Length: 185
Image: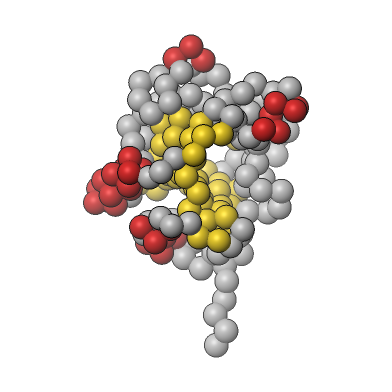
């Protein structure tokens, strides 16, 4: 896992109707402030740079939030080839423009401490690339934000967002179990 050649990202572009719907929903969600987009209060304790953001949780710890049923989860899972993989966590993020730190990655992290798949969807037109890192935290890839695009990758890869400069940056982040569930027939 030390170089870009072993990083595998699949890219999916959603149909315009879904793109419009998720962007509109992103503007209507209630948002909650956090002092750091990767580690929350833990970032301060670790002496890491603070990258504040707003988040809306749809699903965490097997508990669905009040807006969970507003998102077409089954269609998303099918569209990206994970129709039978259990969702572990889903939340939407909002980062506001901070042009003074353009192209500086936020704190590198993995979303979970166990095997998982990450799906990141970009609901709106913005900038603020998603960065990927090798084991030594060298940047090995920058994925540009593109409205309507979802990237899917192995959750073992450390990654980070970066601050937008021209518009708020929404990201729908979904974590899936890596193995599809089978029915009990």
